Image (cartoon, rainbow, N blue to C red; front, top):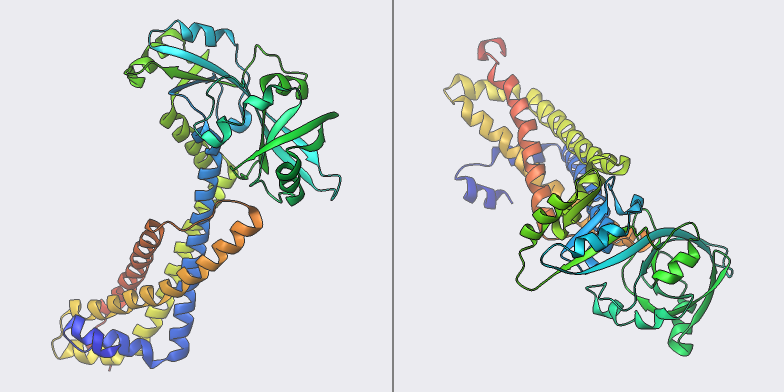
Length: 392
């Protein structure tokens, strides 16, 4: 390692030599940086899972534009809107189809285990192209039969006997809201932070499950535009037609971005994950500063000697910053490996899509290097202010 650093730096890697001089201190410093990396990576992983799961339904819905109630903030709390707005939207040039979609949540208790599952129930017209996922869309026709549903096989704690029954018999009976339902198919979506899974039914079955809801009050309306129509132009026309105090109009990407922004800025869990990331950086900064500051103090006489014989301040800054960057690299690798293992454990335990895209390690390594560099810069200020005459 010393030889490699000598080749890279073109001089004796004095920073590395000083780090290795006290092995216990080096191990403690690397452990601190590793902990900071694990904390940051885990918080970013959970935050990304929050953002991705909050828009899984949005991404699967077919449509160029979407109408929501005026007070829309998140799909979980989507208020009903007047269905008449759907017909009014159809009168806008370029809009060729409008699809009402109904959303609600229901609890189902598995009689075999006693476990309770919180479902997002999605009610749709079975004859319309509602979903971009063809594996879901092709299963809508059988839902025209009363009290039938297709179930999310990636829901949290999915009972495997349901898949076995659907595969063998084409149906699995379950009871919800006092109604005997039949699961006639399965699809893949997954759990989110607010629901354990998803259940898709026809709009008529939805209204039976939610007797307080009316067909004239869909949660959202998906709009399809004619070929060649610019969504931005149609969006502007609809905004002009409907004041924002009445309904809101979103392009799909804008709708997804609005949901994720709400999760990040206006929910407690989004704040917690963001705060945890910042605290990881602070913890790492303090640990590295303490290590480097102690190192400077222990070698103050040697630094004073070099300073007295003419070495410039930037030479000492280079040594301390070298130590800081070496600590960031030494702590990052084990932190990344530990985080990969924890990602797998967390994803398996929560059924959330917690994964490690290749950009995240690069981001975290950059943050770690910056954190250690700041710590090193703070530690060098004491050394630069020292007078050699006062140190002997």
